[in-house]
Length: 378
Image (cartoon, rainbow, N blue to C red; front, side, top):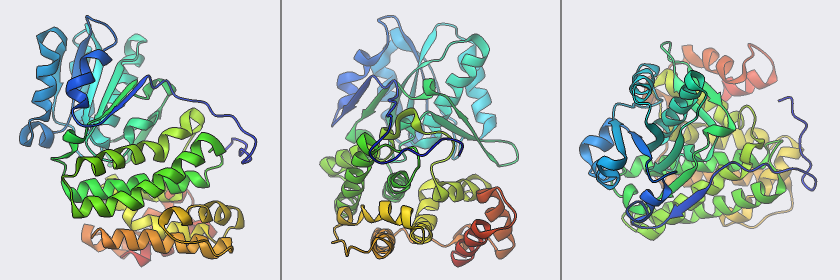
């Protein structure tokens, strides 16, 4: 990164343009219309096929918007936001000049797709769309100014701009009740990945970033196991949604480039091999934390997380950081999310490709370390 790292007690936090955050049961029913930017707004919905065909959620939002505000719905967004579907959604929105608002319903792919559509609209007519995000997973795509999609070659492409941050986020626990439990919990580990990597991110400020991500780590360690035992408990769902928000939103617009090595590995593994990003975090995060524990500065930051996992610090930063890695690994195991790359037909012949993609190098210490991690997950 080209930016100068921010010392813990000297920094600048630059917030996003988020206007409203609603949370709690039935928040969509109670707040959606009030969140529209004007009384005459026309909203276009972007979501995935599964949500549209197996749950009543999309129809519920369409009915809330009614003929006065509903301008159409696109339901074909797939995992990792393939560009063909993104092109189709963009063209559909472009045909109706009355559309000023986009409503994304779902996980990271629909939310990122909505951000990318807004980005492309701006390229065409100089105007971004007002964005209302209704998340149904814990991926936290609604919290960032980045949008990722997959090109024809299966490579993840990212665009970024402060105007891409959704203007409104509505965390409605009822919209998560139909989310498959494995998807919900694995995206919870994705949020944990955000929070842990922000601890040693060079542009993360002490307040609010690190203060909030430590709170998020505690929430995820506390409520993911409780959710597994009682997945219809809406209080647990809401607390996890708020922990997801706290895992990455507080970086604000300070975030430039990537988040960290675990995320870089996740992008190298995700769309090329069809692995959901929640699962990539389950595969990469414990090993990356162990690697980072060897660096004294990173270890000192990671050690701060240990009490928030429910353990006492030893006073040895390296050991405490390694204990954080062990705690993450145990949480993944307890949630039933242990995964091998073999489960996704990734063979040893792919190790060099993955290491090169993740590190953007073909040799060196970091390349070797990533290759070793990948080999250990086969």
